[in-house]
Length: 509
Image (cartoon, rainbow, N blue to C red; front, side, top):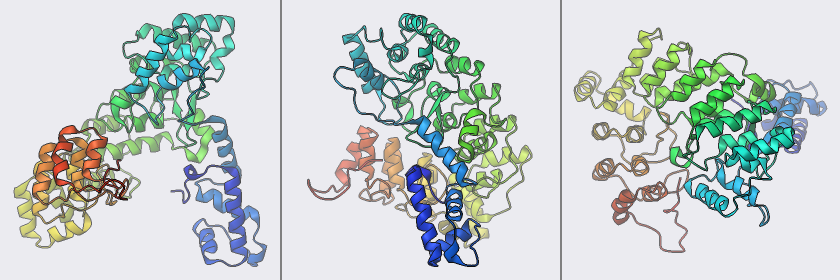
C-alpha cells in the first residue's frame, strides 16, 4: 500500500518540496528521514551529506506507490489533463445552458431529485437552450438539436464544454433529467456522437482521484449515496451495451465500486460478456500505471466485498468466471478464511466446495459465526468445550455488535450481547474490521430499523454517544438519512446540546 495518499495533494510542486525536505533531513541525519529511506529500500550513500535529490525523489515516488519519479510525474500530467472538479460554481446569469448542464447531471458530490427538478424547470423556462449548446442538447436528450449541430460541425462530438468541461457523450451518460426518456433517443444520440469520433472510453478523474469515472460509470450509476440520489441511467444496460460494442473497456473500477453496495448483479453479468477481469486494463491502465488496479485485482476486491456482505449470488458469479479463490486477499486471509472472519457460513461452504482451501479450525471464529447465525445450540457447545472462548471473541472482535446490527440481525444482536459484548462499543458496519467508527445504535438509526433500535436501547445502548468520524449521535444519523420514525423514537431519549453550544449531536455522516 502507498505510504502517502496522492488524493491529499496531487501536485508536482508539493511533491518536489517534499523531496527537498527529505533530502535535507537525510543530509543532517534525521532519524525519521532515514527511516523513510529504509522503508522504501533506498540506499543512503556512505556520506549522508552527499545524498542526492534523485534519491529523495525516488523515495517520495515509492511512498506514493510508483516505481520511479518519472512515472509519478507522468501520472500527475494525466491528472492535470483529465481532472474533473465535481462542484463548480453556478453558471453566470447569462449562461443558461451551463447552469442547465450543471443541474441535470450526476456529479457524485451533491446529487438528488431536487437538482434534476430544477434542471427540468430551467429547461421549461428556456426551451431553446439546447439549440446552440451540444452539451445541453446531449444532457436534455434532444436528438434534433444534437443532429443539427453535428451536421454543421462534426468536431463538436469531441469538444469539451459546459460546466464540467466534459465532451457531449458524457453529458448524455450522466444526465438524470428525465426518468422516462425514450431509449431510442438516448441510443440515437450516442450513436451520432460515436460516429463522429466520440471515444467510448471517455473518462475523467473526479477531484483528481485516480479511479476514472467513465461513460460506463455514468450509465451504470449508483454509488455511496444510494439509488435515490445517484440512480442508474434510465436505460443503463442498453446504453452500456452500446458503449461496450463500441469498444469501452469492461474492467471499469469505478463502476464496480459504485454498484457493489447492493446485491443486484446485472452490471457484472453484462460486463463479463465483454471480458471483465481479464486483459491489461486498457487505455486508463496505460495512462495511470500503478495508481490504477489491474483487472484481476479489481475482481479480487469485488470478491472480498461480496464475502463481507453475504452476497452469495455474487460470489457464485465471480467464481463461475474464474476469480481466484485460493490466494490470500489484501488482509492476508484466504477467501474462505475471510468468509469465516465475516461470519458467512454459507459462503465458506460454497468456496470450499469449489476448491478454496478450508480455513484452519478456530473456536473463536466458530463462536462468532454461530453467534452471527443466532445458532444458540452451537454457541452453547463451543462455550462448554472452550470456557475462555467468549472472552477471546470479545478481545478479537470488540465491535461485533456493530457488524451484526449493520446486517440487521436482531436475534444475533441479542445473543452477542448475552455473550458479554459491549453494546456501546465502536466498530464499523461496512467491513468486518475493528475500526472504531460508530455504535450498533448508529447502524440501526441509519437503516431505520425500529425493532433493532428498541432492542439495543433495552440492552443499554447509549443514544448520546457520538461516532468517531462525523461526531454525530444516532439521532443525528437518523435525521441525515431521513428516518422520521427513528427520529421520533430517539428524540425523547437523546440529550442534545443547547443552541450555540459546541456540542456535535446534530452532525451527520
